[in-house]
Image (cartoon, rainbow, N blue to C red):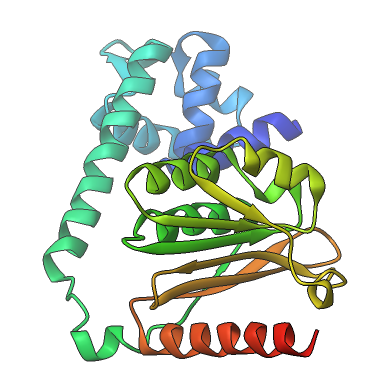
Length: 253
């Protein structure tokens, strides 16, 4: 079995076929059509098992049976098989998520007040930042020192909120990032206080109104991890601490 065939078998199994079903299906496409003996010669499936496997594949709509002596099998066209498996996957997906939607319980307000979440992965953190920023009604602050963490999605969100009348402030120690931020309509751009410039593990900061924030760090391998909380008492208190800390440093300098 070649590595590519092994990967194909695993893929078919993830689509709902058994290992034997995937092998027989691939084997029939390899020979075009054949008897159970023919199939057993080209795939690692016992001849005695080919009959039941072929019957299952026929029920799935993936092969046709010629009632001859001996019985012969041939696979359906690849495009037809692709559509059959896609429809099956979609039906199973819808059945699974329809059930989850039916039993899902919305958290009550008391629980929501204490929700603190962790998200890992640069793309997922970026999506969460944009989502949090998009909810701003009065003011928002976004900060990052890394150009790659200022995504087009975040840039669009900053401009959209500014156009909606939200006070938008963006901060970066990087001149390249500040130049990109300066090009955004309605965004006020600034550099961080000097005592913040040496922080080399910081990723992104998003503060929205007085009750939502996200803080991320970047590891040595470039991976990003964030904690975030929206519409919560935790976020409100932490925002107050951050702002009080900045005011204290400004008075000392």
